[in-house]
Image 1: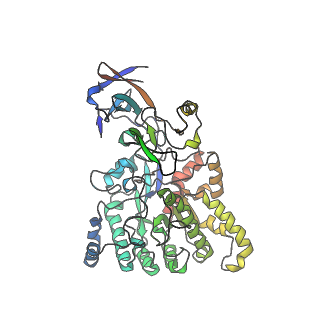
Image 2: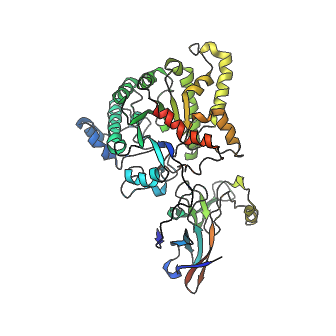
Image 3: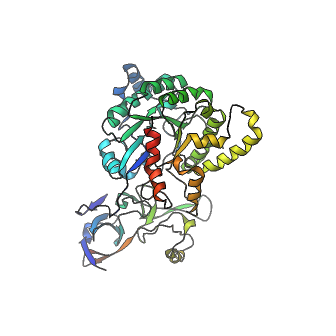
Length: 138
Length: 368
């Protein structure tokens, strides 16, 4: 794994993103409340540019019908094409819970019975802040 | 929304995109007033004073909010205007990138054929046809237009088809799926007669305004119910076309069902054949069983196509319908756009791919 310095962490405020080329591929880097995460800029479903998608949260059902809560504000990315939703922290898709079929999903089941993952995972990359610089490992 | 560091232009990996035909592309007006130059003074004033009342009650715009703004890919908004309104943007983002050799345009908004004022319906249809030639087909020969017709007025619709018959830029006649009566009924026959005369296929695109609930069970709660409801709407209209004897009376009819799914067709055919075998004396004008007409006269576009739980079952669906009946479509610039490289859920062999992505459309739309 090579490490690539892409820029100053201070240039990306919380809630903002940075699009950078790392090893020939576009990467979108997100600052979620001071934590940095990166996704390759290609939707694993049909290839939409993820950097053009909007960030959103989750509308989750409560225990009773009619109870809802809005959670994970700003931590879910919606693809600009078909609206597939990806957890920016893990790259995991939120859709098609019935189609769980890859081993990654077994890991995910441990995260809580309320949370389901779909068949697609946006490729995420390791992003670290080292002495104020954003470093991506590819 | 993004801060972007400078990047070198990188070709899209090593994938070579094959040349395709796209049988559902939606150009649209950048703003409603852009159609005014194509209307006569009388109808300009009408448009500005009264506008268009579509055939459904007490509301403007479509019945259900769409999954994305303007039902479009978020990346398809040109610098000015609505998605699908800028030819050079469309060329760069879609026609060039996806190697579209033949693009069939389907103007579904404004839904001129659904205007309650039938004279305005005819005037607006003519204006949209003029606009398609002036702004699109005359500027890019890959694009072919569909003749927008005032389909609730059969005679006026036939006159519109006659007007454009033989024009090289028009590849089919366009009707929307939600109509005042089931499409096989005789008020619509002049359309089929004129299309047969002009040797043009009839494209029936999902949506429109029939004045009835968008499902056979009434008004549903959600947009997703409208999306899946297109299948039942098109089953009804196709059943009507077959049983009213349209294909028997106008044997040159070639009908393309656009954006309504496809996996439902085999079961509808089986059901029709079964009942027809017992009740054929009710419709003595039919000389052959329903599926014979369907197989000879009906094509379907792919987008948005069903994705069976076991992907291999997609091959069964294709076999039941016939690969020669399927036409690839992207629905650009709408949000449920199908990318030609990734949309088909199974790997087709080369001959099937060639038929689906190019040859079927060439022979259907090229032969006239």
